[in-house]
Amino acid sequence: MIFRLTRKLFLLVASMTLTVLAGTALAATTTTTYTVQMTVVASCVIGSASTLNFGGSQGVITTNVDQTSTVQVQCTDTTPYNVGFNVGTGAGATVAVRKMTNAGNTINYSLYSDSGRTTVWGNTVGTDTVAATGNGASQSYTVYGRVPPQTTPAPATYSDTITVTVTY
Image (cartoon, rainbow, N blue to C red; front, side, top):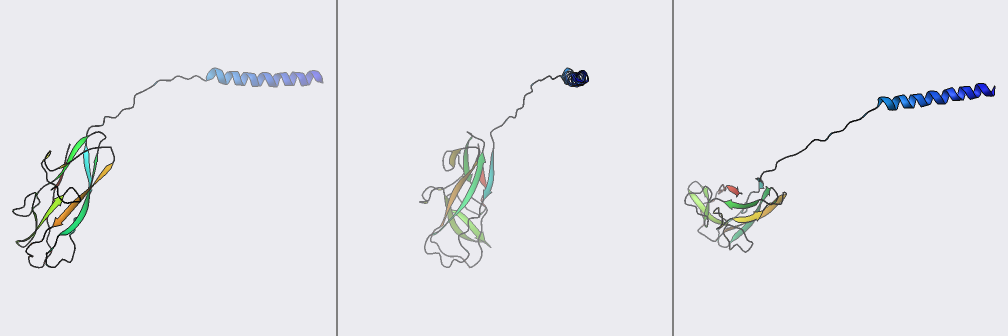
């Protein structure tokens, strides 16, 4: 009886060993490597430019009317760039005196890059644009607008369209 148990135990252990060895003998592996890459080039995008609204209900323009808007720019990390604004679409406008219009009437205004409204924001790189370096994330710029005291035109809604340019 002991011989039978021993023999059965021996056969069981031998069978398990052969199964393990057979599985090991059949398994083989090999490896290699490959390259993953991407080339990033210098680039910038204008994420948004919010409306500069000087207010919906202005009467006679006898004092400065100040408002702000925001421009979002995103450039690749370490990319130098400049943000500029053109003169707009108002006839006779300049960087210093832009013009909102309606039916031939105008309201003069200016855009500034500083809260004190002393540095006019234009579109000549190295002169009146805002220079920065990209960090890969969206960067926010506040546009400071001012309508100075002036002869008030007829009641209407006045507007202008400004083009934002990012040079990099």
